[in-house]
Length: 483
Image (cartoon, rainbow, N blue to C red; front, side, top):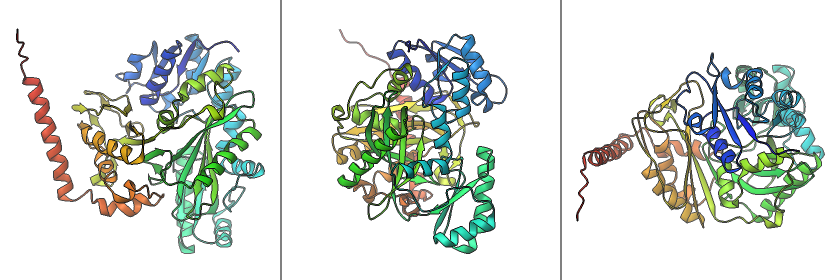
């Protein structure tokens, strides 16, 4: 297959900028698109070419017919979907192929398989991957669902069959709650995914959420890039990700690597992907889903492995073989990623919008910031609330935690509330410092963190006041040059 020369990036924000940078290093021309509320996006300014898509701001990144038409007009030979939007649309991947454009990602049939949570569960079970007890087909009705839940035994979890990102999920702890929570889950699934089908499976109390990064080429070569611990979540959505997991049993780790790579080899998977598991308190492993795209948290894996995941995606799409074998991949140190969101922890994490008036970012050794934000940038209300991702690295876990404390204390965004204050609380918590993490971590800690206390609010205001005074001092400072 010929080398890719020009890539259209069907996305926005920090991931679009991340792909632009990968293209530049591979000497590939980058083309970006933007909606009418994204005209000041930094990814547009950094790309080689950019094209507007007017109309509804959300649909701008979902209308694949328009996107493919633009790609053809701009003479692009490939499209990278990033994450979210069209990244897990089998129809989009197939439409790219039908129009002679390389889709930088898996084959459409794999996207379709793993986009169907029930079908993927059946497929993974067939190749020897342990799965949770539950239904293999959509639940036909509320009454049938209640009957199945009773047979499985409470607690159970209702999941949208075609969902993701924590949407369309409800935990049912007792029979009397089932009907209302089933309706809530199906309604949310229809709202976000256009399909209300749900399935039911046993709910695992207090597990760890561990995921394995896979890279596979077209020639049957499959390797893993280690695991990420994504246990710190809020409303089933990830808040902090860590690589490697600080307290994972070595034998459990090896087994996760083995079954993930074996499954992807048997299923003929190509490109990068992430196999996600729950690990219970007895180290039992249960497959939950496979993400057929680059993950938001991919930077922590890049840092500990030294492998550029975006570039590998592009090279695999070109038809290249993997440039390394499993034994050649060396993991070094610990990396932690903090999702920085425009939301107000003092008001139940209500999404916030506004213009960044003052902006000071952390730096120094072992600090990476993936963001498209800058001073003067207006955060639109049309999209996800994530402003960027702060990633820190150190040789050991203790060093990574200390690095995180320092970097978060340096990070100031003025103009609207963010969740930086929550992250500052987390990295000073004894359980986080010891690596004692489960998916229930935040639920149990929110009252302890007490982000609504007068002292916490006052501390944040004092920190911001000090930094504002520092900025004003710099602005008024006159440089003295001595002979």
